[in-house]
Structures are given as structure tokens and as C-alpha cells.
Amino acid sequence: MIARILAVFYARNLEFVRDRGTLSWNIMFPVVVLFGLNFVFSTGEQNQFKIGVLTDNPVVNEIDHPFMDIRYINKIQIVDQDAGLESVRRHKLDMLIDLDEPVARYWINEESPSGYIVEKILLQSSGEGFIKGVVQGKNIRYVEWLLPGVLGMNLMFGCLFGVGYVIVRYRKNGFLKRLKATPLHAIEFIVAQVLSRLILAISMAIFIYVGASYILETRMEGSYFLLLLIGILGAISLISMGLLIASRVSSEELAGGLLNLMTWPMMTLSGVFFSLEGSPQWIQNFANVFPLTHTLTAARAVMIDGATILDISYELSVLVATSIIFMIAGALLFKWQSD
Amino acid sequence: MNNAADRIPTILEVQGLRKEYPGVRAVDGISFLVKQGTCFGLLGPNGAGKTTAIEIIEGITESDGGSILYKNRPLDRDFQKETGIQFQTTALQEFLTVKETLLLFHRLYPNPANFDEIVEECSLQNLLSRDNRKLSGGQRQRLLVAIALVNQPELLFMDEPTTGLDPQARRNFWDMVEKIKLRNTTLILTTHYMEEADFLCDEIAIMDKGKIIAHGEPKQLIAQHFKEVVLELPENEVANHEFTLPFEYQFKYGYLEIYTKDIATTLNLLKEQNISVDKLKIRQFNLEDLFLKLTGSELRS
Image (cartoon, rainbow over all chains, first blue to last red; front, side):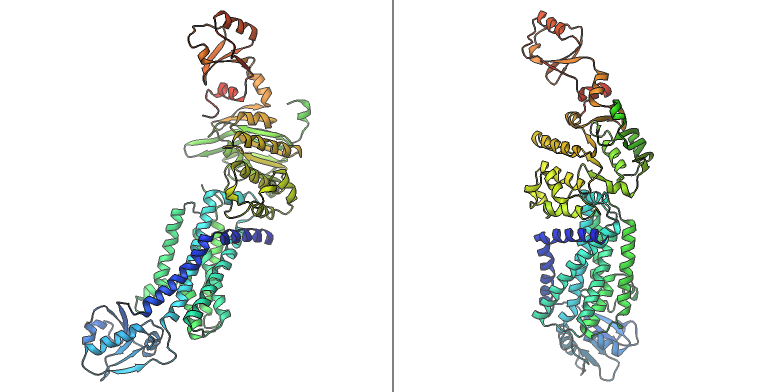
């Protein structure tokens, strides 16, 4: 069994490494995205801001204050001041403001370009004085919050499309049918594909992480081993999801559609580029069905907060469970050939 | 079959095999036996049901009915280990060389054949470092046969192996198959080339519309159905002549074909009617003629 898995694993690796176009794209794409986004966000060209308003009134726009009338600023009710401050520190909010005090107070993250702009808008919108608060703890740069998202996005695309399309292509062109005529079992083929893609995806992620850390001097508060473990479990879960999606499909067009159906919600809801802070609770709950959400939550906790394995045990458990469920379902549903 | 052939053990027995797809009965109750060490040909036009039948026997496609016995027992895991398959169309992994591709399949079997021997048998020595995608049609077919041989199969399936090959490549391929036959490997071959079946097969079954319409040794089958020979005369040799012949004849592919048992009389009759016989050719009936007679349609139509 091991020999058969290794044979398929080795052949798939050779195929990938020699496909120069695909290999280059896999390396270049996340690098371009990382530097592009860092440039965009560090130059403060965002035209929409998100602020937290400390208030018991759930309809924050009813609060009578000139600042609350300014458009293109998303105002979110915050009840707990400490949680609000943590959100500012993590760039989930650009500012926290408390208008109920006799003298209004606000807090921004000094590292946040958006916070800087919102502060200027606030001070110009009202003549009355404000007390400026300092966010406690080491400030987090946006790129540090972004880096796990870019790594996760790279994992997601590489794992889902890299496996899904390949399986569908193999099925469509009859290569899987040829393998069916050998003693190879479906689960052996699947394990070989998972291992092959896992090695490639993690290698790419390490390459990007090391490059970004060196160039952008991003922080790492936690354990590298733990971050690697998160990457491995996240990748296995996403690869297994790709295998499940591709388990019966014979059309590349349909596979593309189904894979997009999975990647786009994850891109927007799993916290790759933006936090879901302020979104309806049901959306935040829904985002938890995606492995990428748990991968990014755990990665940010380790990289930014120095979380331990116990702190992220829930996320790791979800990734293990989804990996097992997706892989078994994929093996059971797997078809070697088209109808 | 003669008495010596009757003593050869049966390796495969197919009984009442059926397969239907919506609106079409692809395989309609076919039965046949394959003797060990022989080459059995399934002959028929495109769409006759050959590939469906062979893929059911290979265990790739499920049947709707019928039975298959390999060495007098139903198909099991051993069947897969003891058989080799060359599919009609097989894509291989891209960016791999011939050697790497062959090694991939070589490693999937518990007791593979000697790697170098397969390479030599299929004349792949000079192609081992070549990218799969850069093989010619004939070279690619030789690689596919090599893959089918990696487990030292007792029974080898070949589904239209020479379709699309030029005559030289086809002839080279036949030579390779002849070498495989020499080591007592049983072959089941599908083809729509009658000359291929004639050259390689010890026994054939002609399929049409999912059924076997004739079954036996090629020469025996032809002898059963035809007592005459064919005289072929270019059509332009008789274009301006009115003639009558007491034999069956027809115009086909630019030739007048006359079917006769009595060549001398036929030649005299033609000469008497001032028809030149300088370009006349005599040939035996072949499997294509047999198929035409049995079905009323061309083998390659």
C-alpha cells in the first residue's frame, strides 16, 4: 500500500514541478498580492472606515453628534470597551469612540493609516474637545494582520484548485480509468494526492512567509512549530475539500464553478483581507463552517498574540474533524471514470 | 477448431453478456470462449459494442447481465493482478518521461516484470528519457503496451491498438504483438482492421449492433461463407462495354468485382465480349467481404 501511494505521490510531484508555468504562477501570485495589498493599504487609499461606538443604543446612527452624520464611515455598536480596544489593536476597527462621556473619548491604533484619517475627520467634524485614548499593548501593523490572510488565501487556491482541477482532468482524459485497472485503491490515490499537494502548498507558504517576514519585518509572537501545524492541518482540510468537490465531476467547467462557489465565500467571509467585525451574527456563524476561517483565526492568534496549542485547540480540532470528514466522503464518493 | 486446439484449456468464458445504455443495447447477450495462449479478436465496425464488451470483461464497466469466468472462477482481485489492459484511449501524466511513466505503473504491482525486459520487448530503449507528450502515435502505443505488461499478465486486453497509426507503425506494432504471443500470453484484441485480425488472431468473433454474428478461425469462417474467388477489373476497362456474366458481380471502389468458382470460364467469357483482362487481379475473399455479406454494410462505415 505504502509503495503504491509513494509511486503516485512521486509521479504527481514530478508533474507539478516540471510544469513551469503553473509553478511560477503559484509562487508569483501570492507575492504580488502580498506586496500589492501592502502598498494599497499602507498608502491609506481606503475610502471606507469602520469605527466602533461605545453605547447601549443598538441603533448607533440615532446618536445625535455631527460625527455620526459623516458618510462612508461604518458605525458599529460596541458594548464592551476592552473588546473594542482589542479590535482597534487588531485593525478590525479603525477607531473606538465613546460619545456618552461628558467629554467624548476616542482610541485609535497609532500604526493604522485608517485610524489616523478617521481621527482627523473626527476632530474637524466637531468643535468640542476629545480625549485621545491609547491602545494598550504592542501595536499591530495592518500587514501583520494581513499576512496570515495572504498565506491562507494561497493555501486555499493551491489546495482547492490544485487538486480539484487535476483530479477532474485525470478523470476526463482517462488517466484515472487506467489507474483503476491496477491494484491501486481509491483511498491510496487520494492519500497520495493529499500528500503531494500538502508538500507543495506548505513549501510555498513557508517561502512566502520567510520572504514577507524578511522584507516587511513582520512579527511572530508564537511558536513556528505551531504555525506549521496550523498550516498543515488547514492545507489537509482544504485539499480534502477539493477532493470531495472533484470526487465525481468530469467537467472542468463544472469543477471550476463548484470550486469558485467554495472559494469566494471563503475569500469574503473567512477574514482573508477584512474582519467580519460588525457583520450580522449569522454571517459570522456561517463563516465558521469554512476551514479557512479556523485556519486564519488560529494563525493570527499564534502570530500576533503568541497563542499556545491550548488556546487554539478548538480551531485545530475543527480542522482535524473536517479533514477526516472530507477525506472519507471523498473516498466513498470517488469515481474513477466518467459516466 | 481442430482437436489440438480443443485440448488447450479455456482461460476466459463469457456467457450471455448484456449492457444497455439509454436508447441503445450496446452488448446484446454475447457468449464466447478464449483458449489459453491464443489471440482472440473482437472484430466489428465503430459502435458495434466491442469496447463496451471488452471493458465489461476487464472489470472497468459493470454489465447488466451475463457471466464471466476467468480460469473457471468469477472475476476477483487476482484477475486484476493477472491481466494487462491497453485502453483504446489513455492519457498519461504530463511532464513525465517514458521511464518515469513506466516506473509509476511498475511500482503499483506486487510482483512486476523485469523492467529492462519490458523496455526491450516494446523497443523503448531509445525513448526512456523522452517526454510522454513528444511520442509519435506508434511510440505511444508501444508505451501503453509496456504499461499493460508491467505485471507479467497472463491475459492481455488490447482495444483497437493500431487505430490512427500509419502502415509502417502498424506493421511494427504487429511484430511486437507477435513477440508477446510467443511467451504464451493470451490476447484479446478488438479492431476494425480486418487485415490486423487476419494477421494476429487465431480466433475471431465478428460483432455488429451488440451481437456476435460470426465466430471461429478467420480462414475457417471465410471458407464457410465463400466458395468463390474474386476477380477484380478496373471499372474503366468495362466502361464502354455491354456485357453479361452468369456469375454474381458488382461495382465497388472503382472496380468490377466478379465472384466465381471457375476462373478459366470467366476469363474466356470476358475475352469473348472484348473486355481486356490485362489488368485483372484475382484475390481471395477476406473478413471485410465476410462482414459485408453478413451485415450488408461496410466494416469501416
